[in-house]
Length: 110
Image (tube, rainbow, N blue to C red):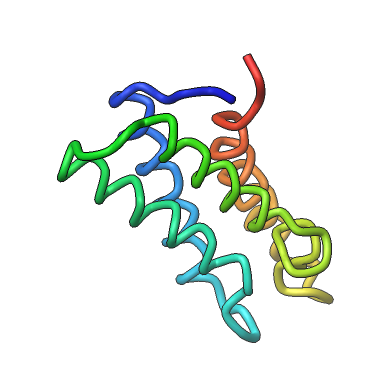
């Protein structure tokens, strides 16, 4: 399992925040279920950065678990369709996929 540096955690928090803001501002029918997992990830990073208490390895395990939960094929990012039936929002779909991939890069094995 990969361990993040403090700088990587700050960048990851920023990427997650951008994704959460995008999700909040797009007109979803209901808030996506995976939003909670992303919000938990952001909050856990913030707690770790503010307190500097605990092992980074444990935080990385929790972040990895939450990212997997956010990508559940039934309730996660893969199951979510951005404004279905509206062909005029292709650029929003592209932005959404870009934001998801930026966060996802942190969880690729190096």
